[in-house]
Length: 111
Image (cartoon, rainbow, N blue to C red; front, side, top):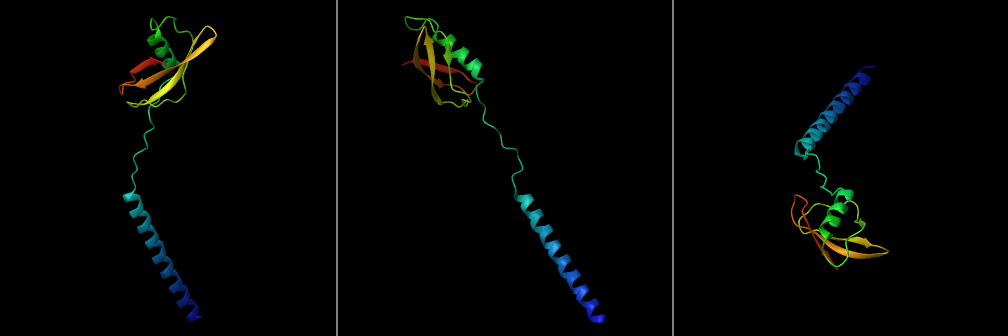
C-alpha cells in the first residue's frame, strides 16, 4: 500500500512538472508570435475600374470606347500593369492599364 502511494505521488509530481513546462513553452511561443492581423492587399472595385478605363478612353483614337472589361481583383500597387478589353461595336482591343499612384490613379494606353 505504501509503495502504491509513493508511485502515485511520483506520477503526480512528474505530471505537474510536464504541465508546467508545457505552459511555459506555450507562453514563450505566444509572446514571440506576431499577433498583428495580416493586412489584405487593396484591390480595385472591378465595375468602378472598368468605368474609369472607359472614361479615360473617351476622345482617344478615332472611335469612342464602348464596353470595357477588366480582370477582377487587381491589386492597387504602383507600377502594377494589366490589360483590359475595350469593345467598339463588334470588335475588341486590348488596352494597357498601369497603376500610377497608391490612391488608385491609372494610366491607360491603347495597344
